[in-house]
Amino acid sequence: MRLRVGFVLIAMVLSLFGARLVQLQGLDPEQYAEMAAAEGTVEVVLPAERGDILDRNGQPLAASIDGLMVVGDPKQTEDKAAEIARFLAQRLDVDYFTVLKRLRAKDSRFEYLARHVPSTLANDVLQEAEDRGFKGLSTRRDAVRTYPGHDVAANLVGFMGTDKPYGGLEEIFNKALSGKDGKERYEVGAGNRIPLGNSTEIPAVDGQDLHTTIDRDLQWYTQRVLRQAVEQARALSGVAIVMDSRTGEVLALADDPTFDADNPGASPVRDRRARSLNLSYEPGSVEKVLTLSALIDAGQVNARTKLLVPGELHREDRVIHDHWEHGLIKLTLAGVLAKSSNVGTVLAADRFAPGQLRSYLTRFGLGQPTNVGLGAESRGNLPDPSVWNDQIEDRIDFGQSLSVNAMQMAAAVNTIANHGVRVDPTLIQGEARRDDGMEIGTDVSTERRVVSKEAARQMTLMMERTVDPEDGVAPLAQVPGYVVAGKTGTAQRVGTCGTGASEHSCYDGTNTVSFAGFAPAQNPRFTVYVVIQAPKVAGAGGGATAGPVFSKLMGYALQRYGVAPINKVQTRLPVEW
Image (cartoon, rainbow, N blue to C red):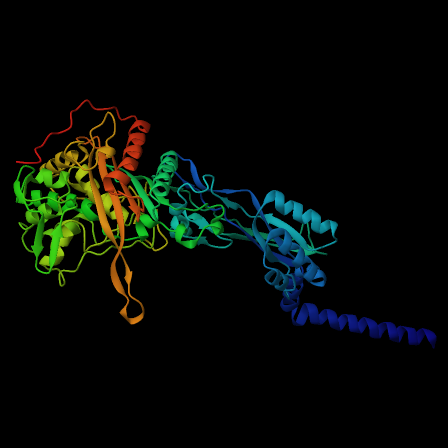
């Protein structure tokens, strides 16, 4: 009887096993296989390595170095999640509550806890965690973004946050730089990878390097000279641009104040943008280069045209003055430019046909983005034909009632240096696609003739007189051994007046001072444009404040690129008659 009972019990147990086996393998095998696989597999992201941002000589402006991410397995961390989160928040400066939530995630075996951690720090933290008895933490490869020059070209390059880029080339070319992450799926047992278990891998595609036209050493020097000038003038800010006159390639683009791209949080947001493209302002008398070269091209005047220039000019409800007091004087057109006479410029520009000046300024590139390579670029303001009238044109003649960004103005003046042909300024060597789909770079830049070669030649001769120690207003912009062509600019800055409902735009009592020029004058190699905003020292002006910066930058660029001094006497066009 005992044997029979035993056999019955054994048969019943075997029947249960058999029924379960039929359920698992016969009725719903795929569902149970998936449940088992999910319980014993982990899928991880294989981060793509971000492409470098390089200067024209292959030197890194932004690079990726070895780093690690710290990841967690919630099945092993949930019991001590609060302790581990507190520990990681203290050691890796991550958010406690975010990490705590991830350490307790349900139905997960893989959670990011900290990204882009330097390898040494990550390994030290993992060792300390192990010593404290924390389980379920590990590391994966995750490159760290670094900026070797710290503040060098920072406003141009931008910077990387934890998960996304902010500003500059990092943001505009994020897709190309980022590449495409891969992924890997593998089996685990007891929290560890099974050595011979099933696994699949889709490799990461690393990002592309971005080659810029910037010369890192020239950029460094430009920033230091600009910073010194801004500080000495007790100014609000400054911009300096160095451009290859023939190709439009931007060799240096400096902003001050700037920031350390390796530590952007230490600087205010306003110092982390590219003022050379974002800030629009009235250009002042540098505009006269465009006005008068257009007038020469139109066949209305030449460098020796004689003008009777009174001390002031009454135009409807406005009185136009010069920057110095004088009675009726006899100036040539060259003299009008050399002495930067507003009155003389307006008298000469009266010879334009209706709409003619605006057409020229549009061809010079004003009122439209340069598409040099960065986003959030100001278009400036070139008044629409519907509101353009004689009063507005009078003020635009000498650089008021319109606004530009610094790159627009540099490219416009460079048109004269390039013998009347405007070439698109660019920051990218070759060709690259922005995230918005626009193709930019030296391979796709365009050019167009704006004024004749003869008009550009005459304007160059006139600009040489600007730096003349006797007749010009900017002798401090001279470069020893070279003939320089240039023009000063001083303009009132637009701010706000009134409060509440009565608030309106007005001139705020501060100035923008600038100097634009190129050298060697008759065979230009570089164009340099310097802008200083709101200097507070007495006597600040385009020639006295921005001129010396131009001289230093141009002299350095000419020597760096081996441009031999030219044994040529400065042009002596008559300025009076």
